[in-house]
Each structure stands twice: as structure tokens, then as C-alpha cells.
Image (cartoon, rainbow, N blue to C red):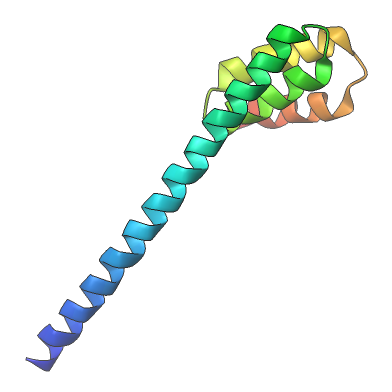
Length: 96
């Protein structure tokens, strides 16, 4: 009986922790979506901004949109071929 009580308490605590973890993940996902939307607006308004494309690539990558991130990095590197941070991010995404 004691074992069942401990098991029940453990399952309740686990459920609560999972609920809060899920909420945090949803919040972080929503923030990444908002940030990607922001940087996509920046590159629409300032299409010659390699930093805008680079930042859009970061958030596309966070959201798992690998091809979109690579497309943004390609645009950033066409505008600034020496953009080392963009080159490094591209290597990281390709090697995932």
C-alpha cells in the first residue's frame, strides 16, 4: 500500500513537471515564431541587409526550417561574402 501511495505521488509530481515543461516549450516556440516574423519583415523592408537575413536564418533554424534557414544564409552571404558568422551557421545547419 505504501508503494502505491509513493507511486501515485511520483506520478502526480511527474505530470505537473511535464505540464510546466510543455508550457515553457510552447512559449519558446511562440517567441521563435515571433522573432522569425520580425526578421522576415526586416528583410522585406531592407533587402540589402545581410544581418537581417542572418537573424532570420537563426530563427528559421530554431524552428527546424532547415531549407529556409539555408536560403536566408545564402542571401546573407551573397550580400556579404566575408560574413563569418553566417558561414559558421551554414556549416552547423548543413552538418546537423
